[in-house]
Length: 139
Ligand code: AMP
Ligand code: ZN
Image (tube, rainbow, N blue to C red; front, top):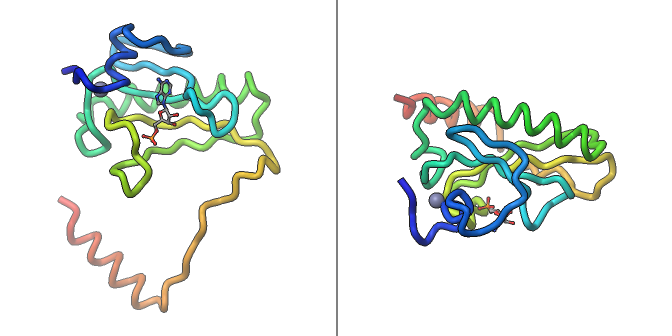
């Protein structure tokens, strides 16, 4: 399944170059061209799936393995102190490329990238009600 207008499908097809760091039958990992920190890479399935929910769960093991292996090598290669693994789903969450991908971002002490801003619940009832609502919506 490949989408003609998808930039990541073009990378997989070899029509657009990339700096590849890891590849299996199902997965490609390459450097993000606009790194949050140098060494920032993307793990993508070779099949085109739009986002988290479109991914076949069978790919989960391959994705986890790629994140672990490439993530470890990125930390070692850059001398990073930590690693963020993240995924943006839908525009509101910052998704720009609609081919599911996981960001591997090496992090350094005092690299200036703050933790995301946190809020507080009004009270414990509000948190409990929301947890119940979420629980009730899981298949
Ligand atoms: P997202 O905002 O989660 O959809 O992330 C898309 C990411 O893809 C961004 O961090 C871009 O820098 C990266 N990106 C876009 N085009 C390319 C490309 N041709 N090669 C490598 N990374 C890319
Ligand atoms: Zn694609």
